[in-house]
Length: 390
Ligand code: FAS
Ligand code: PHB
Image (cartoon, rainbow, N blue to C red):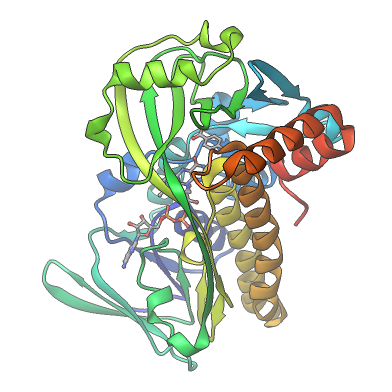
């Protein structure tokens, strides 16, 4: 089998890259380890930057998003028993974000790909990139007990943090940076109206909490929890009590409770692998970097990498120039590190750290007080939250 670009992973990175390439006449095959249902069932991110929306528009996959997405022009920080609104649109010259679940975005991209008759191999096992240091890379995989080889010009490693692509790179060729946080996020989805019309990021002595949503009738909530907690430790009642206990009365009073239909705990880490290119293999999205979800950057960074790699590959095939792919790693990493910094800063500011001590907590309180009373400080948060320029 032959294709121009072999894509490993059918998450947002792989599906968005595959659609953009196909729309430009560049053939590609997506190899996905999981089942189609598993890919479609994943619950993850919820906030899209305008740049991500623009790229989905370019992929002609933004129709449902335009109809169902909720444009938000502000967020609130909750501390000191009250809400403090950050007017993002006012601070960024009219920019905002779109609240639209990653689950919906994945559905849109899968539907688009299938409508276009593009090849996605689900349950592709033992996927292995080969020969990416030379001119004739290939990807091997097993399907229904038969081993297949895809010969290609380039390989896009869109297979997430636990994928095979980064692991296929010789250790001496890659440098990684990592910070693990001493807590996790317990998240639920419930078919109840959101407590507030915008997102609330709460800093509380009992820990961080986040009030988000998927629509006007479906809410997404998170509470910071000990890293070794198990989902079964958290009944719905315990979750709702803990969430309301971490919100100011004006928000807690509007929390509508109900049965959760999704409940999971995600560990938090900052991680970056450098470089993001190894010959004809490119690392994209979570395969190359992970951020704590506090800054709502993970999915948007994946789209950022896709944009740079798509531009570079289109240049190769349409203008016979490798300048774009040669610049991919440096350009992508420049934007990645700024988002890694912002996500680390939001996480450090809003969470309770066991070893912070009284001094550390007073510094957090001083920074929050400064943040909501300084237009310059609020503007810095706002311009990072809507997404820095490409
Ligand atoms: P993904 O991990 O989404 O996709 C990788 C794909 O590759 C998967 O389908 C996987 O099955 C496949 N794969 C892996 N190994 C393979 C192999 N060997 N062969 C073939 N296929 C393979 N971001 C936010 O912005 N906000 C959030 O609230 C948020 N919450 C998150 C919660 C959790 C539990 C997790 C894990 C992530 C969260 N993220 C969040 C980040 C998330 O949205 C990612 O940034 C986004 O999914 C990145 O997309 P991809 O790079 O496509 O990686
Ligand atoms: C979500 O809705 O899942 C979400 C929103 C904002 C974040 C993290 C997660 O910062």
